[in-house]
Each structure stands twice: as C-alpha cells, then as structure tokens.
Image 1 (tube, rainbow, N blue to C red):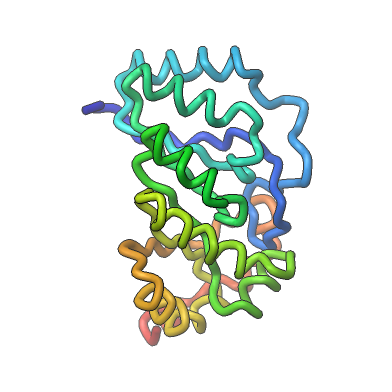
Image 2 (cartoon, rainbow, N blue to C red):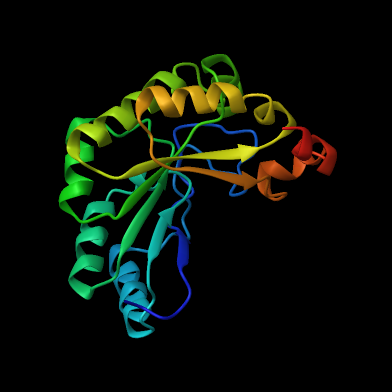
Length: 201
C-alpha cells in the first residue's frame, strides 16, 4: 500500500449537471487546459513514483472524460488504487460493469435529498432518477458505491429522506461534506449551516 497522501484529481471541468454549489464551476464542455491522455499518463507515472495510496478521479463529471477508462486501466497497471467521485447519472449497466472490471475500489455518488430538492440543487430535471439508477447498476455489477452529500441549510433538512433512501437501496456508506466556498459554491455562503443547526440535526 502507498504511504503518501490520497490525491483528488479534478480531471475535467465538463459536467452534464449544473449544480449550484459546484466548487469547480463545471460547464457542459471540457476546458482547453485539461491534460491530454499522454500528459495524464505522465501524471499517473509521477503519482506511482510517489507511492500514493489512492487516486480519486473527480471533476466536473469524470465519466465525461473520453479517455477515463484508458486512464483507469493505466493506473491499475501502475498499482495505483483508484476511486470515482461522480453524480452517478451516467452509470448505466455497461458503465458499472466496466468500472468494476477496471478495479475501481469505490464510487462516491452525489445526491442531495428528495427528487424535488436534488433536481433543483443540481439544475437538471430527472437527475435524481438517473442517480438512483446509477446506484442500482453499481449494486448489480458488484461495484462498491456510497452516497456523498454536500451539507447546506437546504440539504440538512433532507437527512431523514437521505437515510430512508440509504436503507431502502442498501447503500453501505454515506459521506457528509461541508460546502466548499469556491466556484459557484462561493455564492452560497449563506447556505452554510450554523453550529446550532448542525447540532439540532
């Protein structure tokens, strides 16, 4: 196992959602400054040389990066353990089977509450249903997955619904994250729960 820091790589700014809190200010299209496949492999070589214990592919939406599977395969040949941070909406049965095959240790899938709250927060109608399908496809493929929730005053109220969903869907892991006040998230500073609101939740 590696001994260095876990690395989170925002490998693309492209995303199919328009989340209000996105710290990367993701857009529908990739930006010109993103690493080419060759540059990305050089980056992975460097991480392997530093013996990092894990690399989390994030974004944007990493599944929109056309060479993602190639990079996951390359990381595996280097012995770098990989994980995904994804909105889950693009995980159909074939994709779930593929990331399982490529040895992705964990897929962290973001969801922010009930259908109405999640879709408003994520900026796209139907995102909730597609994310739930992503969870189910991972489970069917045997791919380990868990739920990621960004905590705001709105989503804090959704915790009962989230935990009902976790129980109903057999989701084994839930990670709660503070709002990151950068990108579009900088405009939501008034949505950061107070200590009192945290304690009452």
